[in-house]
Picture 1 (cartoon, one colour):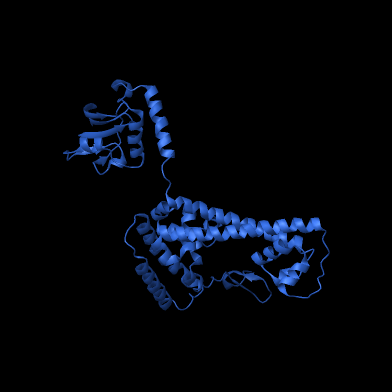
Picture 2 (cartoon, one colour):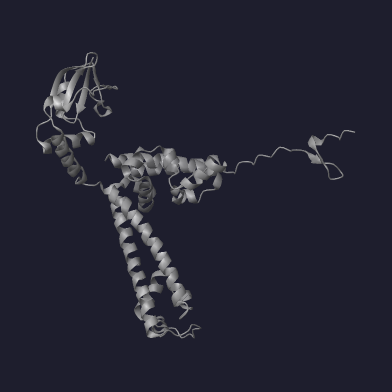
Length: 367
């Protein structure tokens, strides 16, 4: 039986019983070209040299699972094939590996990786804006506490950044009220204005990032967006670490993405396991009665996984059909389970006698 073995310096066809090299295709003595071939191997490709040696052989084993289309993968010790026996030096190997590293680091990054980073950046912006908004309310509330009832979030920060003192804000809002806050010195007003201006810029950045994420996820995942919408699709991709990994997950794992803490709590303490993770944001799941949510989450995760696979491998658009199927499945779940399940009665452990003493199983005490 022949086995196909690929080393960094060449491809070898070996008799697995006698360890005799039957044929070979050596890598060129050019570090850049050899590095390009090794990069193709690392990406899971099949080299022309491998196909050439495997051609015409009905019974062939291969030493790498990557080559499974050429033969049956098997474990094989090929350590006896040494580069020095074919004229390859350690210095040449070092040069090849340097070129390989440069090639892999300069490869274009999949756009879903940018989506993951954008989602995490948005989370950071949300956290920072919440902290600064709280600080701004506490600080400016000493000067004009009534403004918290007149404006919220972006408008609150914008009014402070624009005017600073409460007189200008009251004039813009066309109000005439007497504030209970204390007066600020001009230096204090400028400081709090700077904070308001910083918060306004963060709010603008949040909005721009949300628009970028929506546009990007609609381009990358049209089928997922047809079911979940852009924000929730982006959130699932971020939690899984990328579209490729999301498409490789089992539906049960996808169903629980975002509920890791609840799952660990279940494993530690034996409490009820979670039925859903971040997909709870799906409107029909969130609005459903508690006893229907497990079935809906399971059905939804299955359809989303199909959509993710189609998006990852650039299949034909089927989002509308999948959306109709999940809507029909949810309607069926609601029809089949209209009422909550009956609670199981706990078994009686005994009862008390007339004197208030516990009597196991209701038996009379012995004398």
